[in-house]
Amino acid sequence: MLRFNVIAFTHHSIGVEEIGKFHLENDEIQPRMQHLKDQLNISELMYVSTCNRVEFVFVTNVEVDQIFLTHLLNEFNPDWDQNHILHLIENAKQWNGINAVNHLIEVSSSLDSMVIGEREIITQMKDAFEFARVNKLSGDTIRIVMRQVVQTAKRVFTETSIAEKPVSVVSLAYHELADRGLSDDARVLFVGAGVTNTNMGRFLLKHGFTNFTVFNRSLKRAELLSEMLNGQAKKLSSISGHNHGFDLLVCCTAANGHPINEQIYASLLAGEKGKKIVIDLAVPSDLDPAIKEKYPVDHISVDYLKQISEKNLKSRKKELIHVRQIIFEAVEEFKEIFKMRQVELKMRSIPEKVKEIKQNALENVFSKDLEKLDDESREVVDKILDYMEKKYVSVPMIMAKQMVANKEFEK
Image (spheres, rainbow, N blue to C red):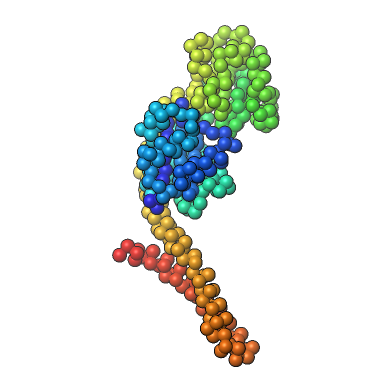
């Protein structure tokens, strides 16, 4: 278990803007992670990237020290200068062995989320593992860890009230918007058509909003969201030509930099002078900060929502004792699961060894004796050997499991 490690960069340690610099497009993840595996002698790797954290979950025989971290970050992004890398290393969080398992369970149970009780993280963790599995980045250790992680998180959300009245970043944003009293015929512009904006669209549609325009780099994805909203779909490249004004701008793209710059924002205003509401759920921010200095903007950002989430944390702390008890039990259970898995792996060769012994007995040691037997006697001998083969395979495994359960290996 000492080979199992987690290195994390979170909104707590480096802020959401820095987290955004770790963002990779979907088609970049597999080759980048494979490159890290090859360069750092990593046997298993899973990459978790959300709006408020980036985590490298991996198995290696190499010592994970500052040299390793420097190498990892240099290979992850060769364009980063050494001062930036040093800053990241100083603020990295690191866990090893069973502590790493405990950390992943806490993360998936939303104890380290921007909003405690936010269910979205468990889906993100499952998706990260599935990607690693399908792309042959992970292996047996990460598999059994993630199985325990997901099962425990599900138990937390089922058996406690930590997610009672769930408040995700999107729902927080909507609650903020509801306080502004925007009319349901307000002109709503979406920039980006990913999961976050789609969820935001569902909230708005559910609460009676009707006037939507969706801009996205991929017109096909824009059309999917606009169809759900009964709105219009347009390519992001045409956004500067939109001259119908807006009341609410909802942005969440994976673009580098700030896709909504001063020029584009001025064009979207179409000469209107009043204060506009901008819900900016991107990391880093889609809205150029200079816009807020030049125009009246009611900016609802991820950082702002984080401040609200901290207030919500107080109302849910009463559940933390229950949650941590569940996590403690799961970690203790995992210790036994891991030991058992190691026994299973060590004993995988037993069936083949038994087959080899059987074949050697039939073909060499007792071959002449067997030739003297009639067909009926030979059939009986074969049945006996088959029975013994099955027992010699199963009995050692049963005994090993009993020894693990009774903790005889520890005596």
